[in-house]
Image 1 (spheres, rainbow, N blue to C red):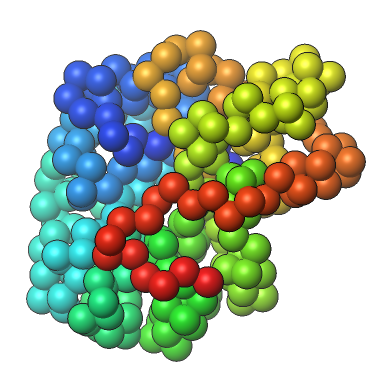
Image 2: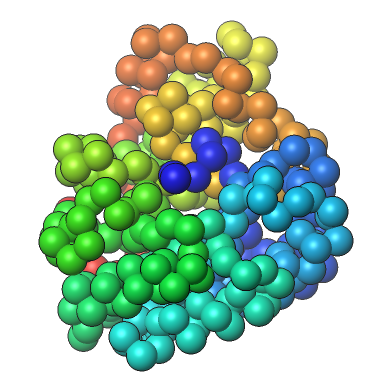
Length: 266
C-alpha cells in the first residue's frame, strides 16, 4: 500500500494558495496528496478535496504526526483531529514526521501507538519520515518491516542518501523522496539541463523521473498550473542508463532539511 509514484506536496503552502494548488492538481489528475499536522494546512487541503468532487476512494492522502503528539496517549487523538480537518474518516498513510527530538521518547512507543491507530482504522497504512538507519531499525523491531509502507526522506540529485536508501531496500521498505528538486537548485544544473534538452523535457521532469525510475514516490509542490501538469508527466519520461549514471554523479551531500532537532544523520 505504498504511495503512488507522483504526488502533490503541500509543505509551505498556506490558505488560499494551498486550496488552489490542491484544486488544480486534482483537476489535472493527481490522486496522491501529501500534507502534515505541522504544515497548518490540513483544513484547507480537506476543503479543496471536498470541493473537487473526486471520490475519496480514488485518493491517496498522507499526513504526518508532529513531534509534540508522539506520546502513546497523544498520537491517536492527534490523528483524529487531522481527520476532522481533512474531512475524512481515515487517511491512506500516516507517518511519524520526525523521530522524537533527542530521542526523548523511544521509537517503540510511538511506532506501537501508530500501529494501534492503524488497527483502529484511522489510517490504512503507516510509515516514517526523516528516520536514520538506527531509528528505522528500531521501528522494524517494534512493528516489523512489512508494516512500514514507506520511508519519506530528502532525496534529490545533490543529496542521494545512499546509506539509508540501501538499508531501507535491504528490508523491503519503499521510499518517498521529498524536496526532489532541492528547492529548484538542481534545475539549473548543466548535467540535468543537457539531458532535458536532449529529451525535449523540462529539468524538473528529468529530476523527478530520476527518482521515479529508482522506484521512489516523489511529491513536488507547485502553485502554477503548467508546472503541476508538467511534473505529473515526469512518470512517463524514460532516462537512459547513461543519464541515470550522470545524475548519480551529482551527489554532494547538500542537505536542505536540517532543523535543530534533526537526528544525527547517516
